Length: 97
Image (tube, rainbow, N blue to C red):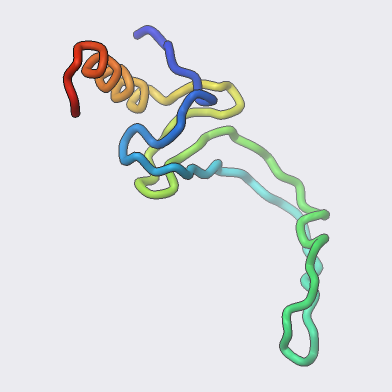
């Protein structure tokens, strides 16, 4: 299959149209969570400073949770690419979904 699609070119989920995605990451470490005695929220600006993040690049749609591709490799997943090829082919021939 010809890989004509890059992750960076996606504008929405090809499966459901959602405009948001998430990346699965591994996080390790300890945090110091600040609290106030009066129950109000305390500043926790440095909460994530002591954590080590491992970025996988694997991205999923926020709404339908389907695999979209890898942002680090700038690749689109096989199923997403198939759907994009079908949509582009329909648009190219003047059809609509």
